[in-house]
Length: 190
Image (cartoon, rainbow, N blue to C red):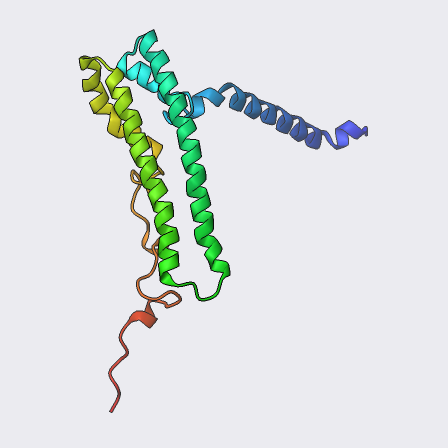
């Protein structure tokens, strides 16, 4: 009996696994652009999204690109300041007995930078709105909420999914207590 005849099933299984892996990799490679549609908060995605949704012409698109470039440059500097302020805040953890006034002052510096970023972003979208024709402004007013929400962090949990199962939810009461430990004690026996 030859080697192939003795191990025929192993060879066939091995060849089938290789074919299945190649088919899977080919499918993933071909479908890579179709799996996840580009989101509107990708770098050029916002510009393309606004141009498409608002029907910007080539002049408006060029102005929008310039606005976006300037906005991102200013944002990078402000985000650096926010990062530095947060680093300074949490660097206070290395010290013993830091007064509340110093912690609050460091936290305020961080939040003040966030506030400036919000104002800068508001002014940026105001400038984009000023590029619009009156008809485009109506469409802009309709889509701006969606655009702003796409820029922020995702909402907690799965807003479109079912509520968490009871066993997945955090228990009420202090951590480490089971259901029986949160019940009031039984009345004393007499």
